Image (cartoon, rainbow, N blue to C red; front, side, top):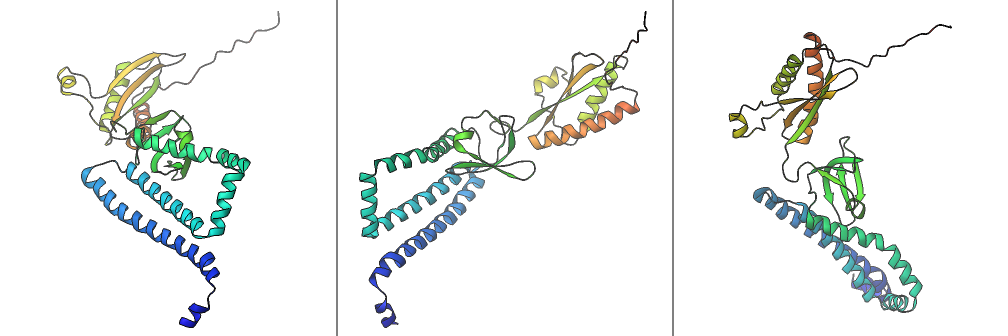
Length: 286
C-alpha cells in the first residue's frame, strides 16, 4: 500500500486529488450545516411560532459561502491557477467588464432576496398573488429566486429582482381571514327581501363560514351576513353578500359552493336570475 501511495505523482495529488478532496469536504460541511440548521431552526419555529423564512434564506446563504470559499482555496492551492487568476483580473480589463455585466443580474437577485427577508412583504407559507398573473403558496426563498406552489401543484420560480418590483397581494401577512364577495343578480320581478334572506341563510349554513362581527356589532343587531343592493343593471338588481372565511383556500371553496346552493334555492323558491333581453323591431318597406 505504501508503494502505491509513493508511486502516485505529486502533481497528480496537487491537481486532481486535492481539488476533489476540497469539493467533497465542502459538500460534507454543507450537508452537515444544513441538517443541523434544519433540525434546530425548524424545531424553534414550531415551538416559538417564529417565521422560518429567514432561517431558510440563511441556510442557502451558508451553502453559497462554503462553496465560494472552497473554490477560492482550490485556486490558491494550485500555483498555476493562482497565477492565471491574478493575471486575468490584473490584465484583462475587458474580461472583468464582461464578468461585471454578467453578474449584475445575480447580484441584483441576491440583494433583492436580502431585502425580501429583511422587510418581509411575504414569508414562507404565505398565500400571495403577484400582479394578477401568479398566485400560490411561497415554498422557499433562495439567494436567486422565490419558489411559489400554485393551485395546480406546480412550482413557479421567479427571480428575486423581478418579484421585488411587483405588486404583491398577501393574504396572510397580518390577518388570514378573508371576506369573499358573493355577487348575484336577480330580476326586477323577484322578491328582493326573500332573495336577501336566502343568501344570508345559505352563507350562514356553510361549514367554512365564520362570524366576523365584534361584540359591538352583535349588540347593535348587525346581521352575520351583510347583503347590499349594489345597483340596477339592464335586466337585474345586483346583490352583494359579504361572506367571511378563515383562509383564502376556505374562502375560494365556500364561494364556489355558495354559487351552487344559492342557485338551487333560487330555482326552488321562484327567484329568477335573469339573462339580458333584446327587443328586435322589424320594419317593412315603405
